[in-house]
Length: 266
Length: 289
Ligand SMILES: Nc1ncnc2c1ncn2[C@@H]1O[C@H](COP(=O)(O)OP(=O)(O)OP(=O)(O)O)[C@@H](O)[C@H]1O
Ligand SMILES: [Mg+2]
Image (tube, rainbow over all chains, first blue to last red; front, side, top):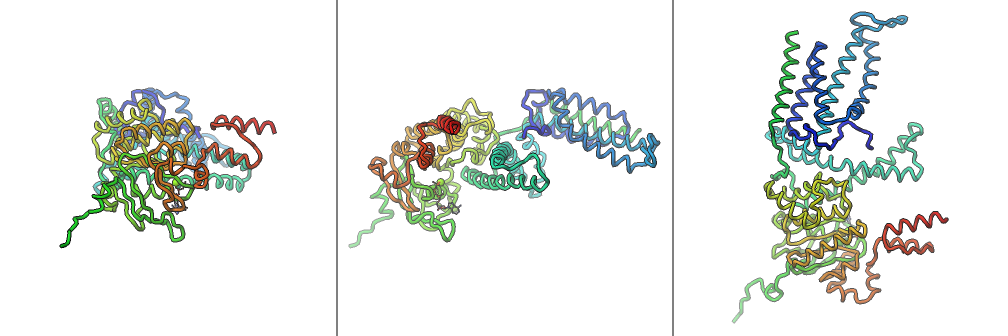
């Protein structure tokens, strides 16, 4: 259950940990947009430097970042095959029989790869340095204007925070059920597709039953402690800006502006 | 000449109990009768235990008391006010409940956030909340664990968080619905000690649903439910004067006791008194075979 690195919070005390989650979220959005703007290769240099800086400032191990990137390798491979077969522009680089590999297929795949790579690195720097709860507060803050349109911002935020709270509990539960089913002879590792499906079903059904039971009890506990959906309530956790946040957001804004300019001018 | 007696006459004779339950009936569906015409009084500052075998209606009674269910018939009166939809928010402020499963009542992401949850609902300001969180976490011995997440806590610690969360809201009444039954012996003892110390002040009225005969004997008053009715009500020494009666109501027996009894049916006699010992003993037994 601990194999997934992407999106995981890493508790250290790095400079990025100390910044306001709203600023980090805003910066992420700006930087991800920046990643998708440029046309020229040179533009990826400042973006890559920024990504490197972000990793350093969040005290992340390169090995950890690499682990979050592993899934896109397969995606890239797949994309390359598709592009090689369909994109027929630029110069011919390689030829076997009737198949020709064009330069554009390579450069296009690399470009998408670079974008995904940067996007995942930036996102990892956010999620590894921001507790899910704080991120949720930031999302709630940013969605707040939607409240005017009767969108239940608080309730959605409450739902997210409860979902986050129960992910570890349920994944522990899943582990327990898997062990129980293994001891009864269910095989989760190998077997034919049908056998695998039935093994997963033997995990899913008890897990859902338990999740519903928990949900009912949790709802009772919340109600008994005076929670009424839609009613006004105060918040214990308050987010606070510091000057670092301003620097981060300004920097990201400048980056986006520079990328847009490069696209217009070059 | 007629004498006009001003209402409420009965109050003057009886004094006023904090909780008055009268002819309370409740069923979840047509076929099962969960509570049938239950009546009892609970005095302010008392420590009352509710006992009865599985399915006798104890949890149902607790849910009715805290307003999670509405009575089919009869009334629940708290400090002179009959519980109804209109005054439910008011009465909820005065009564808190700790449930059985430590995991399923932990709402916040950390101990701090969980204690804050109820306070947020009451619209306290953050600095007031902070003070209360510190005060009540100290009271249940959790000051060191305020920033821990639920996965990092034991069952007993989680139940202490639940208690702190309720104490922070200054209730008059706390209901415990088998709050210790999923805990190991040590966790159980700490929770029982906390309940005891809360009782010492005599400011809180405590209603505890339990299967633990030791706890029952320690309480001021005991209500025995049997099949949705009040079977007996009085001082525990009197209610449990003879041991057979205890058994006939389906009481005793710790988890360990139950395991021992189950094994005895197969001719296996276990001697352990704690879960750890028993695990060891069972392993030894299994390996010997
Ligand atoms: N949600 C429900 N829906 C339908 N019937 C229920 C529900 N909860 C309880 N009951 C029924 O109501 C009766 C009383 O149940 P209750 O949970 O109050 O018993 P209890 O004394 O708390 O038992 P235990 O010691 O097992 O906790 C039982 O017959 C039970 O089957
Ligand atoms: Mg019960």
